[in-house]
Image (cartoon, rainbow, N blue to C red; front, side, top):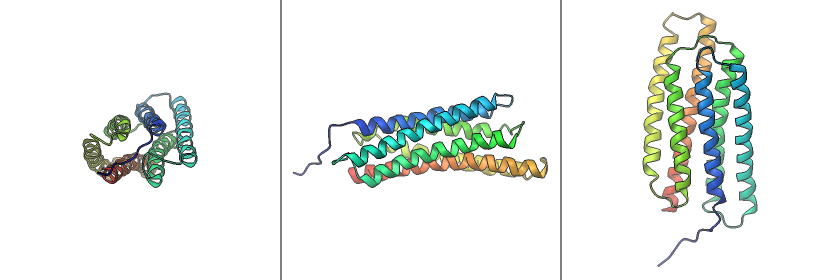
Length: 205
């Protein structure tokens, strides 16, 4: 009977959990940023700090891969997962930055639904990362992320319909469309992470 050797070193799993933890913080900051009347300068700075911390974790994962002879799973999959997690943070950071730079004072309340989807995706992702070590009980994760992504897509289309309804000035439509687009891209990036996790689980099963 064959068996699969796995190194005892759990540092990769710890680092993936750390990376996902940054996404929880980023999603919470994004939700704060969407509150009309919030301290947007302060939140944007905190998001920049969180994005920098996320980058540091990504670099730590890459350094670990490059210095480890036997990795817990395929190196390319480790790179893909680390890059995917980093992409989510970048998209959320972009959304926060756009809100600040565009000086949009009143945001449509429907954007809060997208923020809630992002927060839930982040929570599920941080819960899933430690499960990579045993490669068990992960199917519910990617199924739920897919469902949330579908919810995000439907909400995105409804918001676009509202923006083009004639209730907004043309310049405002352009600004809000960019912001909503960044939120939708962040949700899509979460789905890509879930797809990567699924691919890893299938290979390792």
